[in-house]
Length: 117
Length: 114
Image (cartoon, rainbow over all chains, first blue to last red; front, side, top):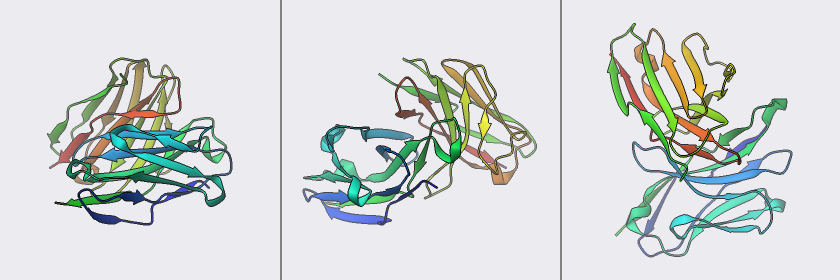
C-alpha cells in the first residue's frame, strides 16, 4: 500500500538558517509528489509538485525539492528561512491506489516548523 | 488562479441537527472534489471523492449515510453532516482537482457540535 513518512514531527530553526524537511514515500508506480504548507486554522497551500522530468523542482516562497527515486525521497529545502515560514508542512503522494479508479492523495503526518528570531 | 472557497468557515450546531458545508472552485472547473477531515495536530484523512454528476466514493470506515456528499456542478460540492454528534466536531477541508494531478484546497470549516 502507498504511504508517506515524514520522520520529523517538529523542527526548530533560526531565522536565516537553511532548512530541509524530509519525506519518504512508498508507491509501486511513478509517483506524483507534492509539498503543501498549512498555517494554523487554514487550508493547505501547494508549495511545489513533481510529476516527471527534472528531479529538482522549484516552488513558491523560495522552496525547492529534490526527487530521488533510489531513496524514495522528496525532501523540501529552503536556503534561508523567514519567520513567516513557520507552519505545518505536509508531503503527499498522488496516485490511483488500491486498484481503484479514483485518483487520490496520501499525506504524511506533517512536520511542524518553528522559526526562532 | 485555482481558488477554492468553503462556507461557512466556522459553525456551531446542537447535537442531533444537520449541517451543510459548501465547497466551490471559483476560477476553474473541478472534475473531482475531495473531502477531508483533520483532527488537531494530525494529518488529513480522506473521507470521500466526488465526481460531478455521480455518486461519491467513500473511504473505508466513513459512514455514507452520515456524511452526505453532493457534487451538483463542476464548481460546487456539498458535505452534509447528518444528526451531528460531539464526536463529529472537527476541521473539514475540501479540495478540487481540475485537469491536472494537483489538488487545490479550501480554507477549511471548523465544526463544533454541542
